[in-house]
Structure formats: structure tokens, C-alpha cells
Length: 437
Image (cartoon, rainbow, N blue to C red; front, side, top):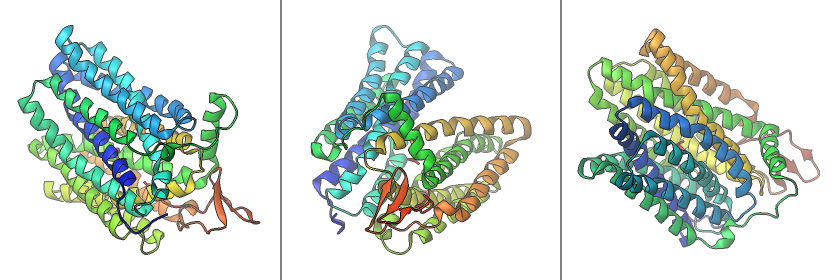
């Protein structure tokens, strides 16, 4: 693998398609709830669309993970981006013909879920081949991806807000559809062999799906990183979507809510950029400790709900730690997930992470309603602080260094030449975005 940091055409196309797909999703995340509210006049309807698409998205991630391991991953990525584009484009078409109703929003949210999570899985499953094709080290590629994702997170909502102000509501979705279609076109320029999969194993789809679960369940490292990532997503969702909006409303500063996403994005940008620049130097355990320590400190400060600027600074610190850990985790996934199993394992992980925000928001809503935003903030921070401390001492997350040349990853475990299984407790690290992610 070439690791001099130069960007070749394959790496550039991979990063560009990632940015375009994420940009479309970030615009839709802001515009779609407003369009639903405008079309139906019901806040409950907006929530219904979000909830109705969450479970199908998780199921799609599981089922399509099997498909991603059977067909060319570049082809899978192109097809899923096209599904996303068509599902979004259908809404402005319906608006100009028969009119939009709640049922249409739910229907195409479900259809779109078969593009979003599977598309993310297919794109992630291509990572090992993209890095092997040369152009830059895996640390640099993952760091750049995290940093670019943070830029999109910063720019996307602002673009959506500007377009909503000057363009008729549903027409904004043409832009989202165009970005997804553009992502498909850019992905199609990646050489087809980059998306090639290993020879498929025998068995029915149900057997292959079970194999993905078994691979995840048998690897202490994969279980640990999935659990840590899910808890972090759960906690951040509870803060961002419920606790902080309620808090800023109570103190009569609702205008500051928009800065929460900006602060998180700036932190992610700094963390991802730092890892891209120097992540290949030093011990990975040190990067892991730094990332977890920053997120724990940031969560504790956020839970204080002190002055608004303390809260925003704490959000940025959480983003910084998350950027470091997210980049490192991406590197470790490339190294640790067996070839031919990436689609199923990543699909399972993405399905779990798709459900985590709903759990976080639901728990935060119950606590806020019964005990207040301060109690909810303290509880969420306590959950993450406990998880972070456990992660620092967890045996599967102690040895995060690159496997020796005589070792290979099999069914989620390290197997050394002539040594047998090394217990699966020789892992590599933590955490959106993505993040989200």
C-alpha cells in the first residue's frame, strides 16, 4: 500500500462521493421536517416520519449487508445512492401533481431507508480496497473522511436554511436528489475491481445474515467498539435533540441552538484533521485515551448546563474527541473485519447505530418530562462517563496496534501462524458520525 499521503483518482472519487452523499443527507435532515410540518401542519407528523423510517432503515442495514457481500460493492453503492435520489425526487413530483400527505412522506422515507444505511455500508466496505489501491495511508484517508464529514455537517444545514428561505419548500429536495445522483455518478468512476468481493460462501441469505451476527458476537473487539459507539450516539442524540433545545428555550436563548451543531462540527473537523495529519505516528492506545478522555470531559461539562458558552465549548470538546476516536475506529475496522464479511458486519453495526438515537431521545424525553432537563443531562453524562471509564480498562481495547505480518483476521479474531486463536481480545479502538454519524 502506498502511504506517502498523495491523493490519487480512486481516493479522490471515494472522498467526493462520500461528501456528496452526506451533503444530500444533511440538507434533507433540515429541510424534510420543515416540509412535513408545512404540508401537514402537524408537529406529530414530522416525528411520525422519523420514527416510521428508523426501524426499516435498521432492517435494511441488516438485510442489505448480506447483499453487499455478494455483489460488487461499487455497484451496490451506486444503486443505493440512486434509490436515495429517486425516493427524494418523488416528493416534489407528487407535490406538483397530487399534493403531499403524511402517507407519501412515510412511504418514501421507508423506500429511502433502503438506500441510506445500505449505501453507507457499501461505501465503508470498499475502504480496504481503496486504501490498497494506493494514494494515501489508511490513517490519512480516514482522517480526511472524518474532517470532510465535519465540514459537510457545518455547511449542509446552513445551505438548507438558505435554500428554504429562497426556494419553495418541496423544491429544495431536488437539490438533495441531485447530490445523491451525483454521488452515484462519481462512485461509478471508481475502478470496478475496487468493489470486487471475495467468492461468496454457500448458504441461504438467512445463513449469511447469521454469519454476520456470529462474526460480531465472537469478536470481543467488535462487540466492545460497537457498544461504545452506540452509547456515544445515544448520549449525543439525547443532548442535541432534546436536552439542549429544552435548556436553551428555558433560559430564553433558543437562537443559540444552531450553534450546537456548529460547535460539534468544528470539534469533529479539528479531530479528524489532526488524525489525518499525524495519526500514523505514536501509539494508537495514546490516541484512544486522548479521544475518550476528551469526550468524557466534554460530556461532564455539558451536563453542568452552566453558561451557554461553557455548554458550546463542551460540545466542541466532545466533537474533538469524537473526531479522533472515529478516525481511529475506521482504521481498525479496515484491519479487523474479515475480508468477505465487511458488508454483513458493518451492516449489523450500522443497524444498531441507526436505532441508538431513538433510544437516546426517548430516554431523554422521559427524564426531562418527569425530572427536568438538568436531571436528564446528568443522567446522560453519567451513562457516557461510565462507558468511557469501562472502555479505558476493557481488555479487548488495550492492544490497538497493527497486527504482525504473520497474523491475519479470521472471523473477528487474530490468528497467528502456528499460534492458534489469540482470544479475540487484541483489538483496536472506539467510535458518527458516522456520524451519523
